[in-house]
Length: 129
Image 1 (cartoon, rainbow, N blue to C red):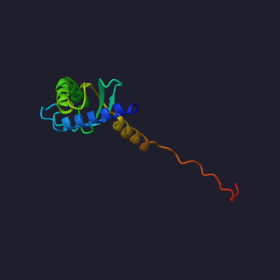
Image 2 (image 1 turned 90 degrees about the vertical axis):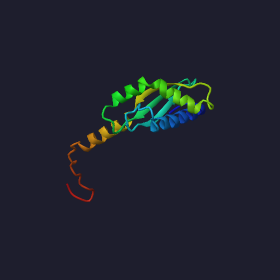
Image 3 (image 1 turned 135 degrees about the vertical axis):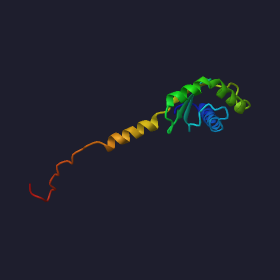
Image 4 (image 1 turned 90 degrees about the horizontal axis):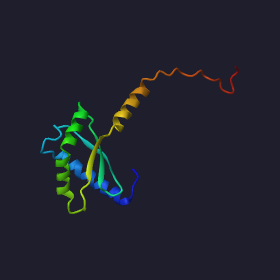
């Protein structure tokens, strides 16, 4: 994650507070889905936060992401209530599915299922061919 120190600090703050908002989800935004905020990337002017979320056990990830995007205003307001004294501008929130872990699991299963025949043994130096 590249960026200035200010961007990184702001991203960590947003990540912590959004995670807390999702954990305390009193508005029923998430339908009891377990969501992890994997990463937050801030724009250079700190006006836009790209939030990557992971939903390991969720069945319909796209539907949950759509529900989060439909209620983005409520989430942003809750974020504003929490960080209003620490920042000048509450950033616009853009949510993305973080598929790093799912891709890693898929790669793992592909590697495990590879059928690689053993290589022909080469004779060692002391043995005759």
